[in-house]
Image (cartoon, rainbow, N blue to C red; front, side, top):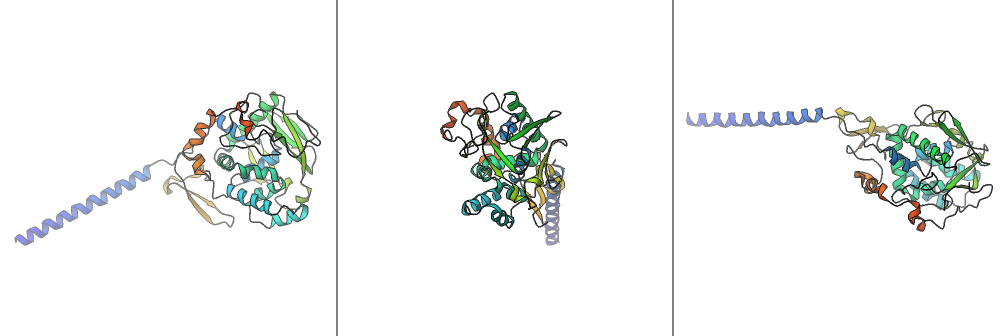
Length: 341
């Protein structure tokens, strides 16, 4: 009898322990299910304005290509290396070789503007953060571009020239090339051209041919885009729709990035945890993990946790000696067909 009683005691103790463990797991499961979905880390209007400052005065279609390509910083690096290794290829041969690559159409399109692609490659942290903002704060980013264009216009630095046409539709400022097959990329100091000097984006370095040492805007050589017209990723397949809260247009449709580098935090599913499901170029489902409240750029040492962004507005303006890194850059491509204005 004594052994029977001891056995029953052990049995009951084990049963109670199992019940406790089960209830503990159930409690944890219920708590995880009840947690709200992670919230996207939002950048302020001022931060977005600083972010778009280097490209806000570019023609609309080029802005569209840059924003789309910025969601693929890894491909920007790959394409930049490829261009350096194939400097002897030009014209139609270049277009044919680019068309063979596996890059996103936006990255292929930027091979028409090697200086722009090289600048994105050189300033990878900025490129990654721009891609993150485009994916997660598209409407606010569009508004930031328009704010900066208006500031440049008010400062007397954004006007129609022989290289580009600046027009206003309602409250929207549109920038288009004057020619259909020749595109000029404006050269300017993004921290001076908008009137009151702005703080330099942390770690941003000027690229020769795109940077003007001083206020105003200049134009160097134009880039011919006619030879790329026969390919689906060419210049005329891109645009920017300012009317519908701002969106990149590719082949008459809204461009949707399928990058596995930039996480779309707006599409989290609370019942599936902190995962973002997208599709790769072959239509396969990709699950990317991220932490709530952080940015998802490719360069975590720069952007995650907001370290660089927190220091962003404590930096010096262009007047504070920034040009030590790029003061020798005066356009690089000459000023044929254009001048400072």
